[in-house]
Length: 416
Image (cartoon, rainbow, N blue to C red; front, top):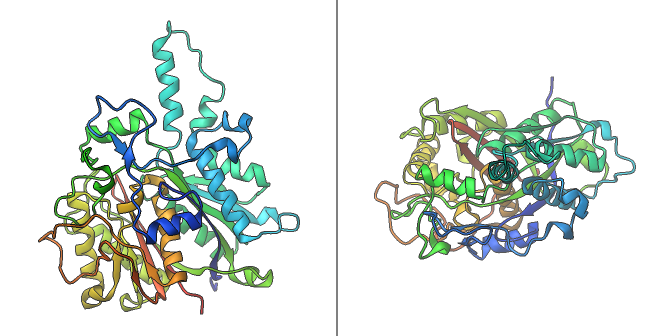
């Protein structure tokens, strides 16, 4: 059967550098850092005392207080981003066939703060199990798309993909295929995460995964820099509205880009470390290009996973050099995690939004905080260091990888 074409018609973003898609974009191209001392709890005894929290965000400005109390932060973030994307797409909610509208979402952890609070409250008590009746519905990772569908009455496929930091890219690929195969006309997709908590920070610190540059939080996320010492945890959500091309065209929708392909792979190597030669990363980019029917030399821009970890950054760039060969030095490569931090299960969504907006505006956001060359990185690669660069982008790729060796890659193209 002939696969249907899929386009992006709406975007929504709630990030540490901007609470809307437009604010997020301005933060990206201006090289804004979202890292700052943590305000959510006392960090005195923690190794890492900073993160990329949301700024000036109050859930009750967007969601009824009664509903807010029944939602973990990761669901609140999902609702706000999805609302923006749906409004941006200008969907006619009165006439749309809601049986053919789905919500496929990504979350790596789900309601971590809810779980943490309920267990701590139980531990403080006398052993009597006095749990909040909303404990389980607030915590489970699939509740975010459930709440989106309930609000809007969308009755198509509804579920969450969980593949650690690749979760929302996995969700987007599933959504792409659902429309390609004719199962849906429209899908709300993306991801959300809210792991800046005692348990989240403590757990990642125990793994030695986080930067401990407490004296200079705003410069701590420094992908590709020789002095990088771990990632910076972020939070937020990104949402995209995907539509079947003919359906979107018939209703006169504005179209940001065509979603032309995706790829998945596994490192099959280690629970948390990437394969040093990037074997799984090579496989996922190869799969993505083949799925899109494109050649390596077609790609103009890659937003890397680029978490600012000593092993991961080098392995990914080695894989890019292997797949793209001599063309690699003609690609604008960047890592927007240098600004947003690592949003875990929401990373794939907000980074896909970044490459789509880069394509729309002809500007590649920078990789900030780079001061020291890493001799293990090919100096001929254009890592878009410290300053945004103008570029006519026809094809853009975004990589996301997760603990467990999960790799996901998505590819967007200017509409012909």
